Length: 580
Image 1 (cartoon, rainbow, N blue to C red):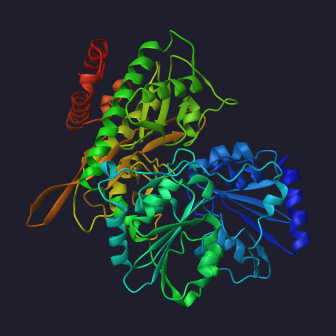
Image 2 (image 1 turned 90 degrees about the vertical axis):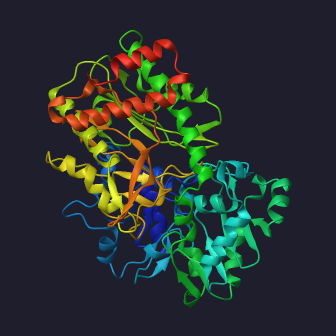
Image 3 (image 1 turned 60 degrees about the vertical axis):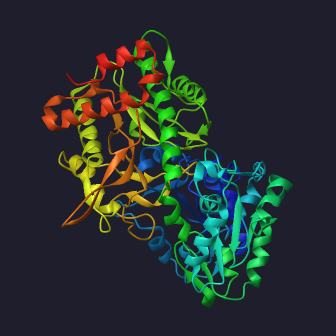
């Protein structure tokens, strides 16, 4: 089936004079996760991971993806004509390097799904047609779920206040073009359901000094919402009108070519473009007092749900039949019992034994494994609450373990706590600086993990948010300092193909610690309130200080959620979740 689709694409390429066609994993807004309409790369390659780029020529086809998906991609591409390109590994060219090998080739792509800064090829470009659309006969409809207003009691600032700050940041620009969905949702205090697990609406925004235009699917927005936005000089227009309106821009326009698509930027006089990161990226990453209070409430209820689930899992494993899918559904049941729960924040990763070595594996109705009372189960999950977004990973011990599993379980937790307990100086410490605190512990055992250590988290928004992140190199084009109000995950791990995968994760709020002659020191406050399953620890790898730190956290989590636990749950917690 995949090879037939590639053959049809090659026929279309030949008809249209295209030598090399690029199919990214993206929508018109460069979203990390995309709606079903935009799953063109998945449809054409069979690879279902959330990140990857397919390039097709008449002679060959390649798929680039990162280390999170190497194992998964190899399995899903097996039997197809597509070869895997393992990004950032020796001997593997980047996409840019590969394209540069063919300077005479005519390059084709849908200009709406490629960011402008990735399209600066010297080649002839054909970007005005989506060839996959001509092949995909049963393509899903473009989403147009209801758009609704987000109450300031949860977010602490009105859209009018946010627009005032944005306009100050625009400086000499007459316009600010915003296409990233989470930025638009944050600026205008709207939410939607057009991307699975992300409460955003398909939208564009054009902000001027006195007024603003919000481009939405007309089927998705009520007159009540339109009228409310108009009170703040925000006019709602049809979603696709933006493509004509940008052609009439006359004056400087602030936009980010890393996120605005090729077609839009190519419609503007490039001399008028001020290419900068959207001001809202940093603004929304620094949570205000209302958002922090609300987010802690979300984590409190999420902590109750996950701890009750943990009790159920640990006391029922081996007594009733379980599999990865039924366990995922059981965790969802516990979350649904909590107030303000709206949805999960990403597809739940519930991975038993060797499945956990595939970092972003998740069970489906067609593919899942039975779970036995032995070895390890990794669950990475989260909730979307009206009050905030959560993301938590726990690796559960279900029975007998190998010595290697026990060692890896311990050093991964050791790494997580090393970062969680960090103190660092304000104004100079970036995510890249902090990444080594966790990764360095893993390095000590000649191991590594092919992903970042942590990412920013949105406020009832995308579970992955920049510019704060913890990784050796920034994803966001610049190194952001970690500052008070930022919420970042801490999730180092160890992954052994064919055997096991282990990850431990808390969300951390950056807060001020002390001021002295060296400057202002910051630290992290954990806002995840769920105990770790200490049954997997090998105490020979831990110092007395590390053991005390783990016990202190277990007590910290218990103190937050104990009032919502039954007596049986409390007794189990106190008897089983502290290192004696």
